[in-house]
Length: 232
Image (cartoon, rainbow, N blue to C red):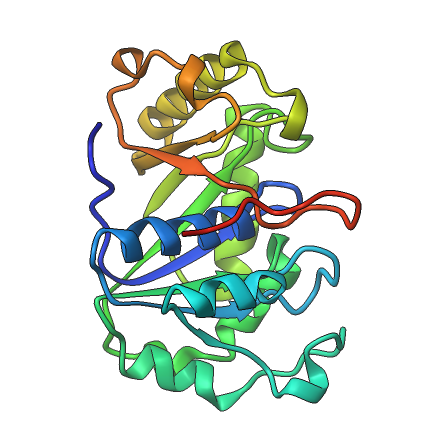
């Protein structure tokens, strides 16, 4: 399987429901397991339900440094931005992942970090789930891209395919989703960095049908009645 070749600062954006936070967590775990020093900043200050901080215990246990708001504000829905985040951007390690909020509203927080990003090279990747509303067409994906770029005052330079229907995802969803993001890559001129496949169906996927890297997703952001996949 082709390795995901990403280093430096990686900003991950996308619309609500794209799965960008799950992608951020699993990318961090994947690279840490391969021996890369990883740190991750949670800027998802808009959506109070699924945020990187919900997986903080497991990430900490495997040695991934996290930048979070102060402890007393971890469950707050207020736009609290710790100066630690700016510090991570100014002093990146081998891989520094920034999990931005959803849609253009969440991306607005990135604009407030302009000074920290000044002079830094970075990847800004749009997570696309073609099985969700608003990103089922190339036109919809490009519109979302434009809105996020305008709000963040930054330019997206790559895409991540994350076709899934959570527990209802089938291998055909993966294959059709892959074909969609390949087309989106061609139409937009953006590199397709990788696609994702849930660990639940990974063994059913014919990897030879996919020419880009594949990230296995071990779900961490689950409803209270389900258990997250244990990270080792």
